[in-house]
Amino acid sequence: MQKFNSVDELVNTIRPVDPVYCIRPNSIKSACGWFKSNFPGKILYAVKTNPNEEVIKHIGDSGINQFDVASINEIKLIKKVFPKARAYYMNTVKNREHIKEAYFNYNIRDFALDTKEEFQKIIETTNGAKDLTLYVRVSISN
Image (cartoon, rainbow, N blue to C red; front, side, top):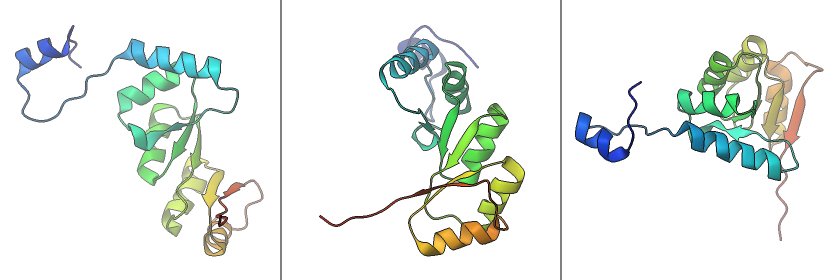
């Protein structure tokens, strides 16, 4: 990966036609440190906000090692970069093949759901697993 001292230098040097990532590792480290110091709860990075592998590496290296994933590709990315990281499959609508792959191939044990049908699908697809943690999203009318 090429490194530049500024965005101007990058643009003037490579004259990109397609979008490019400008990753600032120190800013990522600083933001992660601030968040860890100021948020008392469990911290999960939502991979969908920026699934760039370099960004994920910097976030994990900054001590955030739990990830909110919404797809099997996000799970694969996290497990590639940090094989022991805990990932939470928080998309409330998942197909059976992805549930099966997440559970049996990637050791995903945390799943979100918001319907009886999704609950049944998770239970059936994991063969009635007893080691699941399920997060039920409840909609309450005002």
